[in-house]
Image (spheres, rainbow, N blue to C red):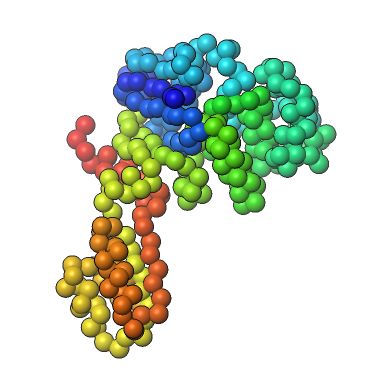
Length: 304
């Protein structure tokens, strides 16, 4: 079932094209990474889903309805903006109680969420005494009020320390198992790749790539790298690999790095494992950050 559906959606600001014929579907229990440089169209996409903007062309549906009718599903939607701002003179608990009333959420959630995001000891402190990371945690708690079936998180790890970041992703993994759909914008790509089901890459308002990490690897056809350590005393191994059309770079006398297409990786690994002069092998497949760079650079080279 599609929780969010955008069909041929465009958004114009005078002569500026913020989004250009974007198609996007998000299913229940899916974590989607919405990626792109500043100005690529990520925030515009989120605002369209939230009902804060109207599309110039195309159709936007959230829970099967126009997001302009968002008062019907206020409890089912949570949003964490990149820069959170709260009433400075209220305490953390008072802020959550205020938003609980707005979303018609149960008051009992407030204390539980403060504990969940690690703010129970600061619940009665005024927000003006909070650090940036604490404000970010309070923003996450606000987004989780009610019974959200859809979460939109814009740079949710900004200001968080490594432990808080780990806790955040554990929370998102748990919510996914409960069927919550999550749209996640982040520039810290190494941190999100283990937690997403699919990535969407935007460039100048256009969709340039979409798919799981493995699907993006297949689309990009970028080589994998294999780092080999051994006690060989000649160039015999390097020459043998080059004859198999493998790109070989010598790192030092006992270490070489291979660049190889993914479809040949197992074949080359079997060859290496059968040798007696190799004592360590490390493999590295293209990760999300490398794929993002590839697709954005490729789109810049394509004719408009």
